[in-house]
Image (tube, rainbow, N blue to C red):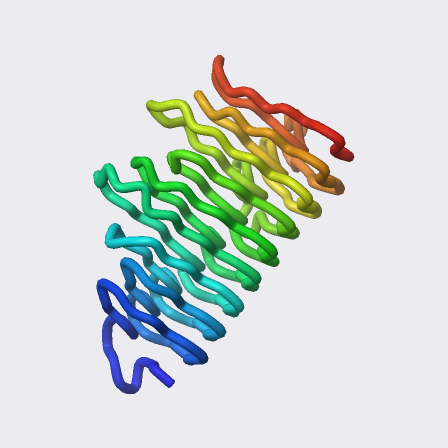
Length: 231
């Protein structure tokens, strides 16, 4: 176990490494700060900052983890690197974090995958600020929106200076809530988002003028393509 009784700041801080079957909890800052390697079968909870903070070192995989009740679940910040390091988040439960379940702050060429995850009870399920390509596959994103988010409590694609693409497939997005709209998916400029073989249901916008309570495009150039999808 790695917890605040031993550490007053971060639980684990490594540029590259492997964490397996660990409990990391109640640290004042990050639970884990890591740049490359793997985090597997770990419970990471109750930390004052992100459960896992991923920096710009190399390819990394997070799998079979339970990440809950942190300030953010997983925070990916790849900085200004031109390397195309892949971030894989697989088969993990990311729940009840104060802000984002997963926050991609990349402004780079990094690609990311979220596969087979359960993401729920966060203020935002997934927030994206500019990964080059994002795949969300076989993932359930549900009942996010705590703290009355304005938009995009399920998946929020923020406006960014460069064009990016995302594919959401074989996934379920339901029961998310926001104030204005886009409770399931909110897409800003100039994202191109494809939703394939998925179900989007029972998402709500609470304001009287809330429109597009399931899916909303903000700005002049976002594109959303729905294929074989139930809304």
